[in-house]
Length: 115
Image 1 (spheres, rainbow, N blue to C red):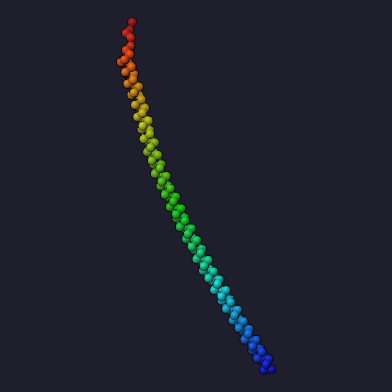
Image 2: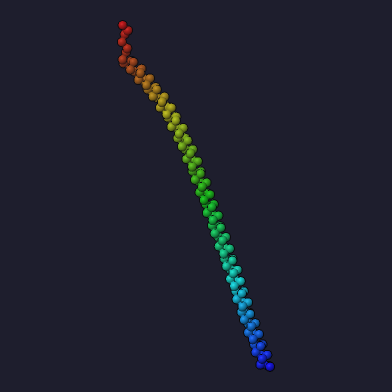
């Protein structure tokens, strides 16, 4: 009877030791899961931060491009105004030149006297 009780006590101790080992394994798995969760959360935050920075950089680049395009449009507008002014002046100069040539021609080629 004593041997049977000792064997049963030994089995109980063995089962408790195995249960303790299983609890330790479960704790390790839970810790590992928590570590994975923390690491993955940190990674997700890092990726989100990086995407935010890229979006800010993209926004800044688009704003800079818009500023450059606005300056270019202004320069083009000024050049078009200058070109139009030059066209007007050129037309006026041509009219004046034509009138001067006509006067010179008339001075050098007097019309014949009337019959």
